[in-house]
Image (cartoon, rainbow, N blue to C red; front, side, top):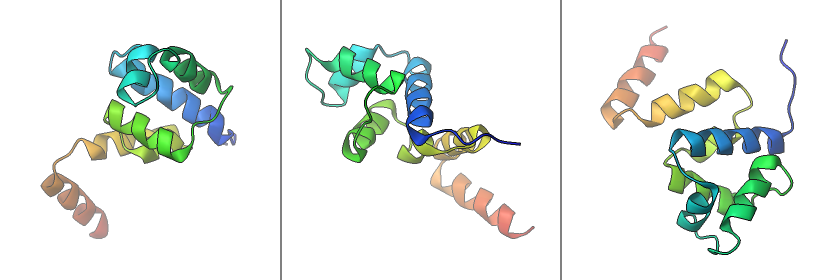
Length: 105
């Protein structure tokens, strides 16, 4: 049985996970995503703690800075989030082949 988590909590955890996976500091991520240097660390910290919610524009910039699909931040299911990351790392040809293999079933 899965427990429904608010999307802010999901976003917060996925943002932190992706940032740590990429080995970036909160400040570094914020600056790369276009957040001002003097508030970058605090802003990312607030997003990761769920104190503030990133706009879709900011979430997209964060996704680009971390090289993850925007959908990864919002996938409720952990396995789906992992699949989104794995799928995004495949070449276009590999993505098409994988999709075709699902259609055959």
